Length: 343
Ligand SMILES: Nc1nc2c(ncn2[C@@H]2O[C@H](COP(=O)(O)OP(=O)(O)OP(=O)(O)O)[C@@H](O)[C@H]2O)c(=O)[nH]1
Ligand SMILES: [Zn+2]
Image (cartoon, rainbow, N blue to C red; front, side):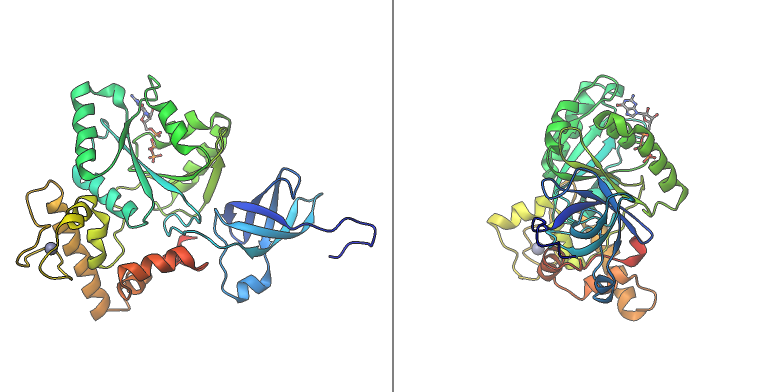
């Protein structure tokens, strides 16, 4: 790869992995080390041997560019600041959770379940309350203040009237954002507003996704005209809770707020039936906490007694305390939550 004595020194080509399918990765090259454009790349054998996965969202070093056939090789994966498992995307900055105010109406348990799943990632979360044109101001206010009490910001959106679009655009600027939410809430409609020129492609991708059992086989980042990248996820109604029961409290801002100023009698309080617990109480999502805790405990018990039946996620995560889970997923290039089945 070394140039002739008269050629200028070769600079490393860097890029972002925009899509992954089978063994191929579509890499958007970064200026100024490369001409604008994308290369279809393979992962170098040595990375495979090292068990180094390449994820959509990864920053990579590319070599052997063949400009004519637009092919290249991924030589190196640069350190990630985080890696999500579902969808398997690296370097995500925030999660946008979309719920419709009507058709389908938001179900507090379901909203809470999505919030807890998203909160487990440790990323910034914003909630979009879509189809605002279908309900009145009372419903708007009720959900915005409910979310506020839960510790989240809710943005009203209507594709019909344009309400909220500018605010959402500003939020997405220069960030990698994953959009999640149940089926039919208007995620695709929002993406079409944000990236009109990608309309056809998004349609194709959505169709592809909806054929499966809501497992993301094809993951793709779409560039926003204003800067930033957006990833859609398939609509699904019951996101998986996949962490240890003791990690659940960290996924409720209401609990974290209480624990900032008060302490439970036991340092390892699970906030269920323990005496002198400062978390247990008459706040709206406490029943959700109890229910999710029960579910996670049952999954953990199943993993302990029937390890062959447990999912890989549950097995690995239940072995680690919360802090270690975060450290692993944020620092290593082999995100703990990654699972080959997701890719
Ligand atoms: N009234 C109204 N309808 C909307 C709005 N946004 C989306 N819709 C309608 O809601 C329906 C579902 O929208 P999609 O964008 O396909 O929803 P989705 O979340 O992508 O759904 P999945 O692909 O199943 O995940 C469509 O008929 C849209 O026209 C809105 O702001 N107001
Ligand atoms: Zn407690």
